[in-house]
Image 1 (cartoon, rainbow, N blue to C red):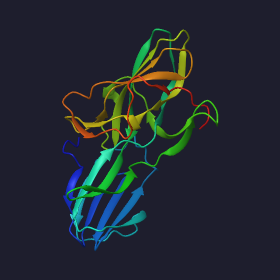
Image 2: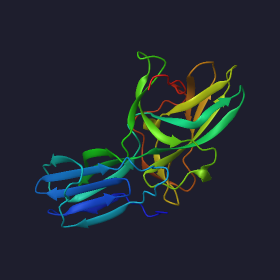
Image 3: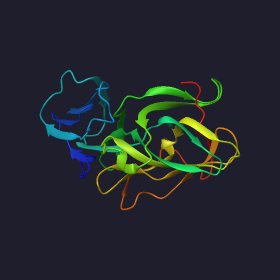
Image 4: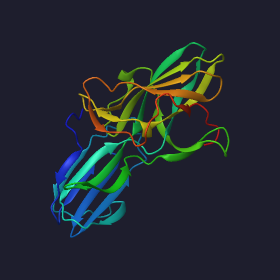
Length: 262
């Protein structure tokens, strides 16, 4: 397991490069005069659920070649302090159950889901200057809603929900969310996938180095696809890594269970 944080601040002098890579992800950042070049490459052929994606870091005087997509960023300052922080996705992530799950009226279930993290890349001096955000895994788009006119654009994740946290493998590039679903409606709740509102969640680092969010509760009070969203406490013995992207209204209703267009 990778307990020491792989994120944070690194000094990358001019004419040097920073490398962060794993089995499925490659990030190289070159520091040139008034310019930072960011190279990103992903290997989508490997199963992210099976591969140990431990990060490796390197700083030195080398120039990445044939290193995937390139973006160039011209800056005004002369800071050589690069800061990288993990964050959660900028859209809701639709996660599939391994098989359809039926929750009877008055019943509940807790699922443990994992979603890919993003990297927030920037420069640090007196302030933080954002250069780019990069997803560690390329996710496909999916439309989550009751029709093509009603719903929202989300990401579709390859993750499969588990009923026990111990059955989720340790993954450096993914964050785990404990999801509690309670059916208080008068009819069965049958779902194959659920929209996880990750932009409303905070990201925490736990003692063993696995990234977690706080607990999420979806309370279905009436028949239909909507549920009341509640956020619980952060994991025990954890520290905050990054806050939510969007403001969360405690108890707000969200479309959580319907997804007929994808």
